[in-house]
Image (cartoon, rainbow over all chains, first blue to last red):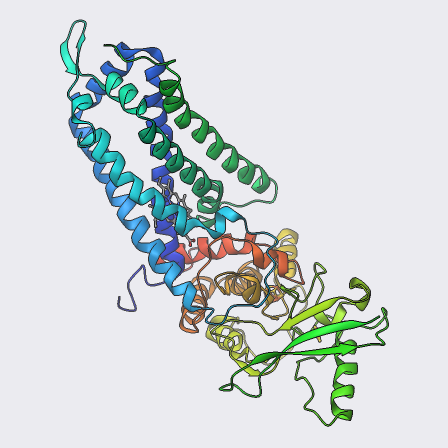
Length: 231
Length: 252
Ligand code: HEM
Ligand code: SF4
Ligand code: FES
């Protein structure tokens, strides 16, 4: 990049990481809210899913924003990490950490695990490549007719133990990532005041845990047959 | 006290370094850490060996020259304390102590525990100043400074340029040091004219020196002997984005 390029400094690159990261955090919240509709029954989640496909312009905008966020996020984090590894060519014989966390020091690992899982997740639920027979199910929605049976697809898939196991592992890496991520992004964006910084850091951890619990509930409820497939 | 030391010995910038082990038998707990090293050096000189090179000047925690990593912590185990102000009573009889230089590409070792911190000087030269007229002594209080701004600038100005923030950071980032200067000068009315030009130039120099980026690990704040807050890094981020997105002109 030439010298006048706006993104030439690590500070500006990190700002992109923060904004794209927050976009994905917001998505995780929205996505969970939608997913939890499985507990409200097949009608609720299937009409929600059909509704999303109706507003296809909006859906595609969201998809493109998310994809762009993911690509930019990964590109800049990998680049920044590489640069910073070079900044300390000789490691310490002994190093004691006081303020950093397991989460903050493993962001690249947790991120790369999430990245690989996202590909699998899309192949599974969005493109229907992992269990095509579950993906093919249809559901008759009152006042509308046959729609894609998201409810049965999700519950049946999660009753395959390995799908659930993989999912729970991935969601755990998301939690580890988020324990550091949200408060870090706000700090990067310059939101800091001694009066509320500690609340922000605690809320960030709380959000990570709440999202973990929410996401993990669905495979657990399917495995334990609290959620049952329709046929 | 009896102490076993493992000290990084490196004859010169290009030379290969390694740890050497020394034992000291008669260390008083009242000695400062540097006085303990003085005792070691006397012993080494008596034995006809090369003394350990370490940097020091004021020995009262204000010059910032005495940095070394002691048992994995820059300036040693005590919070908000420089190596020269650390006392041997922080250690126990029979302890083993590992002593290493700051490790960062931008701080090359000159000899043993001494590193070349002139990268900091070049960052300051790039923008860590204000422009003013020379000549007569200006009237004190001629420029009103709001008390909160004065306090903020004063806290940031406590930075002694020791480099412990870089040493502690897993990314060897110099953000806390640079942020302290940005907040110090940028909080005062005298610093406003160059505020946005300053942040761009100092950050550009920081990056040219080969320091890492900021991941918000907050190790710098924990290691800083002057308790400089990462709050100033948040300010640096804001100021730099303002400069990059809107421009260097300072609006009234
Ligand atoms: C669910 C998807 C993801 C979310 C919600 C997310 C969120 C975030 C957020 C909010 C930050 C903090 C940014 C800052 O401190 O300014 C961050 C940092 C980071 N993310 Fe992600 N991220 C996601 C996926 C990924 C992926 C796929 C990678 C793969 C490389 C990754 C790697 C990183 C790294 C390495 C950092 C630390 C950057 C640094 O060194 O400062 N993230 N993430
Ligand atoms: S910010 Fe603290 S640790 Fe860094 S150079 Fe200044 S005084 Fe030393
Ligand atoms: S010798 Fe001056 S701060 Fe330690």
